[in-house]
Length: 194
Ligand SMILES: [Zn+2]
Image 1 (tube, rainbow, N blue to C red):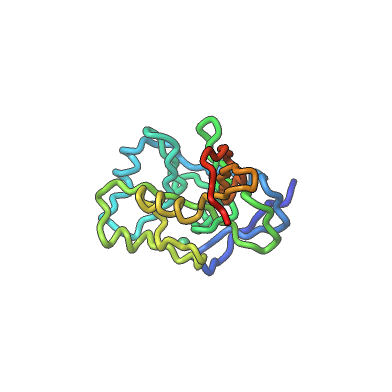
Image 2 (cartoon, rainbow, N blue to C red):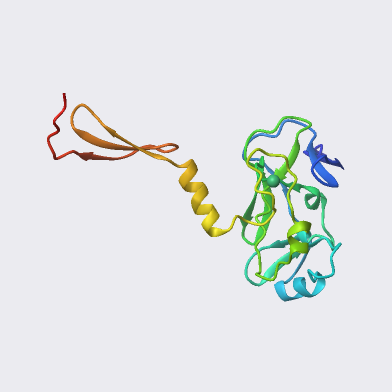
């Protein structure tokens, strides 16, 4: 039998976590997120937010109707912690959820993915506290909830700067920080340059 790719032990982030037992290559499907498949209504019923101390984060939303409750029949995937700067991500494939390596992970590193929890609008100060993030990343947004839309926009604006350059051949070129050159427009005006 293959050695499991990670082991569960105490985590500096929160409770237990999953730690790589060997080098895990980028793109590796590490484990399937398993648990009882229930309706989202049933999930809400089981884990009423007001009755704190429950493992709500063990509910994985598959789609509008289905959630996976890892508290019932879950595997070690349920121990993988959230981070705002994760090295894994959750991928949905034919209604199955897998935790996949976003980058190559060295042995001993804690595996994390962004839970991106959705708010239902009924969050109280208590729930916010409960889902506060202590991942320690520089870009930690302080919560396991997905960034609010307007915030997300701001983040994009801050990180994806477009730089406009005027080349010698009077071409206007827009450079995207990550994608490189995205558009090139011939500059129609003659410029009075010194
Ligand atoms: Zn964080």
